[in-house]
Image 1 (tube, rainbow, N blue to C red):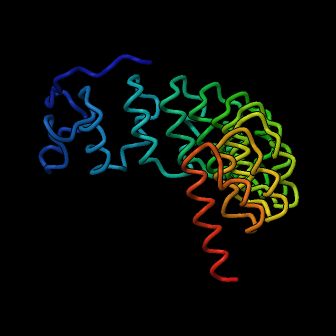
Image 2 (cartoon, rainbow, N blue to C red):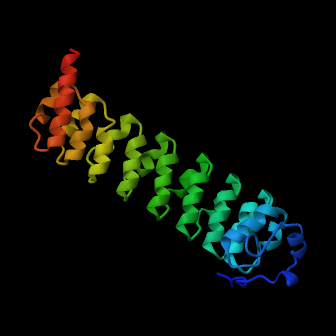
Amino acid sequence: MGGAPDAEADCKACRHSVLRQAERCRPDDACVAVHSGRRIDRFFRRNPEFAPDYVADPFWETRAIVVRYLPHDDVEALIGDPDEAVRRAVATRLAPNRLYKLMRDPDREVRITVAARLPEAELPALLDDSDYLVRAWLARRLPPAQLQALVYDRDRQVRSLVAQRLPEALLLQLADDPAAEVRAAVAARLPAEAAARMLADDDWTVRLAAVPRVRRQALRRLLDDPVEEVREAAGERFGRLASVG
């Protein structure tokens, strides 16, 4: 990170002294020459036309704030900034069709922002990202038919998201997943006959998730389940199904 501005501003030596006369800046409120993100932001909020003049400012926070006020065509000038906070700000404003330039950024927060904004057609390029949070965004955004590539992801949170969106016909691939939260997500979406197999799962959260999906007859095995919450849910659904014939 670069050096910081002086804590106190010298208005007499400031290039923007005329703005103070017009009440568009003030050292204790809106000032680009002090070490205060809030005051710097207020300065550019009132005077956005000066933002392009500060893309090379030595203070990283000034550059990061400037990104918010730059014309869209000028944002790319900071795409290779040495500070990750600046590049994160760039990722939030860069035109979607230019985000590919940040796909391999060393900072994961930058790549997460890219994954959240990248055009859908370009998302597969991030499937090999090393960070699970980036891949989790892919699990949320990829078209369901393209989620197959993440079915065996090494991170359980990614697989859990996949289980919530994968086409129903492909769900059984995750029925024996080592993570209970993934199997529970599967059980909550399977059709009745397939969900019945989840009633024998070793984890009670999986059995509980399957309860609303199965037919009345299949529920009998859970009426004596060792876990009270499962027994109660099974009994309630069993009775409700019985009442409707």
